[in-house]
Image (cartoon, rainbow, N blue to C red; front, side, top):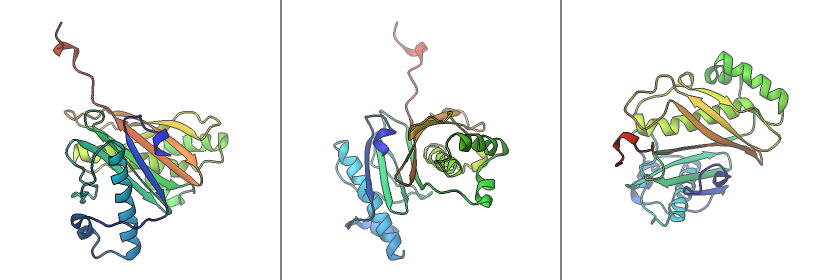
Length: 229
């Protein structure tokens, strides 16, 4: 599912269910006191990350957890991990191709009214109603949640501070008949001096009871003023 949402230079891997995994000691320490189910989830997600790294020709290496909970990737690599009930996935890229990746997977099921109020602005909720009329087969509120999760996953490693649901405004392109679409996120408060534009674009997919979103932030083009004539 992810390979259809990201550029070809991204390495992707996904697993349905769980697989037996032997963790590196640095990884095992992260979940040493966790429940068995959490340890299996963590291990299978790390397995996806190793396979994604392998798709780029890179060796498996420990992926400990950083201060904000995201994996600490090998030098020269950016990536993102996601997991929901019955699905684990990871995407990685060399930092020459991307400055950040964000992926998220969610069950294709509606949010509660309380959760939707926390996730969506009034204008976003109005647009969701319009999309639902066109495509009632997609849980647009959950898709909005997933898109904002992908936004956060590209924001956090670059900015290093919290981004609330209310800090990003997401618009989906008018829904067509297929299972794949695009969305755009605006972050009005994005600080200057980071390689993250105020407007991000991503793709989404609805398939087999899942909603998956993905964003790849590419390096900015060289300043024309710095090019040799």
